[in-house]
Amino acid sequence: GRTVRLAVVPGDGIGPEVVAEGLKVLRAVTADSDVAFEETLFSLGAARYLETGDVLTDADLAAVKEHDAIVLGAVGGVPGDPRLAGANIERGLLLKLRFELDHYVNLRPTTLYPGVASPLADPGEVDFVVVREGTEGPYVGNGGAIRAGTPHEVANEVSVNTAYGVERVVRYAFAQASARRGRLTLVHKTNVLVFAGSLWKRTVDAVAAEFPGVAVDYLHVDAATIFLVADPGRFDVIVTDNLFGDILTDLAGAISGGIGLAASGNINPEGRFPSMFEPVHGSAPDIAGKGIADPTAAILSIAIMLDHLGLATEAGRIRDAVTVDLAERGDARRSTAEVGDAIAARLDQATRIPKEEVQL
Ligand code: NAD
Ligand code: IPM
Ligand code: MN
Image 1 (tube, rainbow, N blue to C red):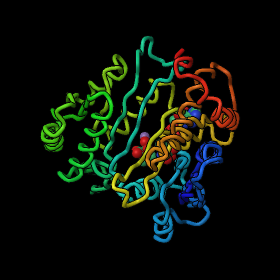
Image 2: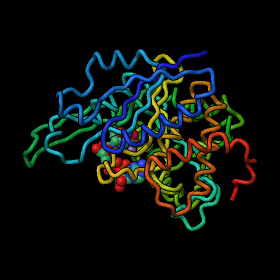
Image 3: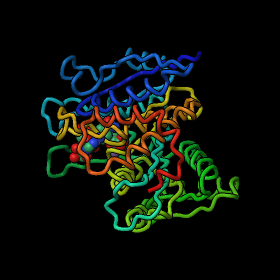
């Protein structure tokens, strides 16, 4: 059998709560298969920083790299906690992992599952994926402040976009579009961010020539938020930069049943480094410790991981089980563990239910 070395970073707040359910479902789906997941626990995050003063040491990073994939819950403490002022867990841990492991594709699919309530009155079919660039843009930390703390402070945060970095993520997005419904939307702000916008636009136009089957269009990011609410069915694949992609994918989660369902993969497509799978949401300090966080996003992130690892059957079984659970969920208030148990219990049942019967 095959062994997959899995690094597990539960993190902070609801991170450990939802990761426990994701692993529960992973263990259940692989129980009778010939692939074994060997889990290594990494206690990283705000809690670890408060205990030891470490965010992510070189040794931690080297150890994480020895794995085939990473599952992460969420990191970050309570915003404004003065004890965390000296550390930036998000930058020093989450972004450091994305950058060091060259996760240039941040894959964030959005599906409005049958029977799931959307806040939109008439959402129609919603099934698109955001290919968010993961290693560049305003996230690179190319900035600084001068005369800080004075009335004349100048704070710069430079967005870095390289031809190499834009082209590789755009190419990945085209490949996704041609494997899906053949429609790619570039989202940017070319009317104002003229240098980066021009690079993204020219790159999309150039790569488009290699994908004649993909129809390309463009939206400014502000207009894209209108269409995500007014006509989300128009989207198939969206490709965009790191910051726009961050914002659009919280909105995408909100229109498709809530952030508790939004899954993601931070992917290094060439497999030079382990890819990392995590819910789109954060550590949710407002509900942490209550056992009420929705673990579905963490569970669906496991499915994205299984696809990435070439375990499509197992990934499909998880998605089918989630589909059935969502269709029957209704308004029932269940605990985090109850949702995980229900989905794990559905793994075998779901495959025996014909797809049409779940399309409510
Ligand atoms: P958040 O996503 O943690 O929470 C936003 C809202 O969504 C809250 O009301 C929360 O209760 C709710 N929510 C989130 N996940 C949920 C779930 N699974 N089930 C039910 N409700 C859920 O965003 P925030 O409040 O802006 O950030 C909190 C902390 O998390 C910050 O420190 C932030 O930096 C960090 N963060 C981390 C990640 C990550 O690790 N990937 C992502 C986003 C934010
Ligand atoms: C996300 C988060 C992160 C991001 C933060 C916590 C650094 O919001 O994964 O969407 O901005 O990418
Ligand atoms: Mn975000």
